[in-house]
Image (cartoon, rainbow over all chains, first blue to last red; front, side, top):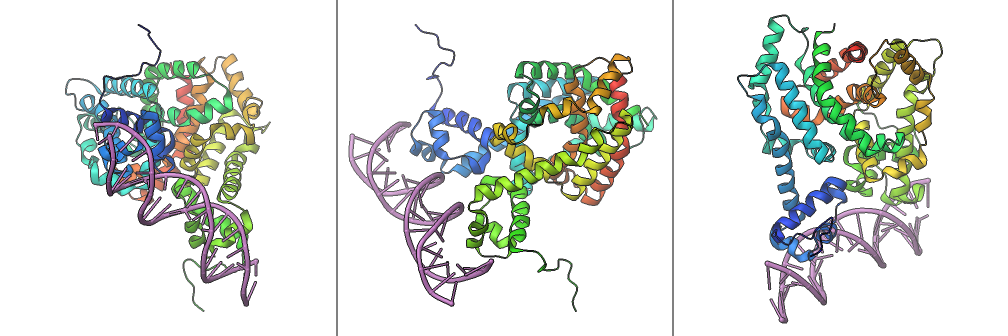
Length: 210
Length: 210
DNA sequence: GTCTATAGGGGGATAGAC
DNA sequence: GTCTATCCCCCTATAGAC
């Protein structure tokens, strides 16, 4: 029995094979630049099967989009509503979980950013999560810290953008950075591991700085 | 004489009209999703003229891409090589200039990110700027601060990503953020103005934190 | 369920009149 | 330089055999 590095997985259904291939190609090229032929080839199936299982390119895309968004949000959903951890502890968990997720699939942020740009309204329609954040334990703890004067009074938009940005931006800039600087992926990944510890520290001093 | 909010500019050449329209549409939709017909309509000209002036969609795109990259890099080129300003003073100028540029054209970062994703190699080919950064006065001052123990020893990749990310990420996340949170553009812009002062302060305490 | 063949439409590009 | 009309390829989607 031969063991190949990328074994042909015959154990998964055709439908799942197509979805996996769609993720790969959509993540890399975006919706518009992706041809259904690319997906079929990547999946190792006939083009007609794509329409047989998913009716259209758009339908298939929507499924991938929703699954990706769900994964992105769910990865921290539980953390954000924990009652028995401090704000600092939550920051550590959030940074750690997101970075782990993105080390596995670095393309997610750019994929989401570009596709939401093409259709911002669709996001709210299918993902009404605005209130979820504001009502979270996490956010209440943040506001509580304000009241107690532990952190400087500032529009919460800054905190949210800094938190997400410090975690996510490196993965968005990755292609540019590696190309320009010549830093290898291994070194990049190592730096991202370091950031799990650094980001919570940074956020703390940023919130206190004035 | 009527004064409209968006006056029809008859003072600029057809060629320039097409380029302006191309910027608008490419920035909003990206190369793949853009139809030459969209550009023609946006420019208020006939489709054939686009090919008359620029031969092809790809050629036109390349021009816009190079001009945008140049603008993005040039906006801080001079600052970065000033001999008679400190590192801190440079941070203030860089944050201020970039944010001003992005307040005018918020779509630039997402445009660059998505298009470089589709063709990372093209970046280095046409923009060999790797050494430019490392040889800059800015970068040397940063390394000097290390030696003097003013800031914590850390891979420069962190500093670069934090600097660029804190400035640029909000503009990348803007469509998502506004949609989800309901914050109006005016409030967003106000926060960005605040960041001109905040980012240099934050970077300072981040570099010192351990 | 999976294939081959092909319909059908959209979009980039050009020919040629003015 | 600018227009109208049109070509032609490519890509999505489906019909229909197996």
